[in-house]
Length: 146
Image (cartoon, rainbow, N blue to C red):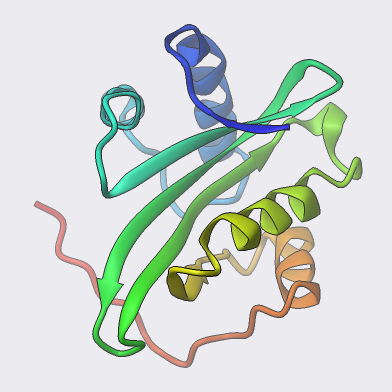
């Protein structure tokens, strides 16, 4: 089951976010305050982000964070799959595939592109994304953190 977050999910989300950023899926750590702000914004219905809980047999098994934006390049909505995390004990249960099937069912009528990032070291995730039809985008990304 894939559902929007609820207030009582905060503790689980914080623990999973810590594990996501400590587990090689990201290039650097993120301040704990960012996790709390993301949760607060998503819970409040911010139109630019959506936080989903992934459940397996009635237990929270992971989460997915979406960032929604308009892209002139594709002429419409771009759904960024910003983070996908599945707890170790639930990996290989089909949750990743189930999430991406839900994503397509939910956004295909509105989205023009789905976009995500993957670290080179996260080989398992990269293989899954390739099997689902994602392909490398030959852009260099640049950032300016404030």
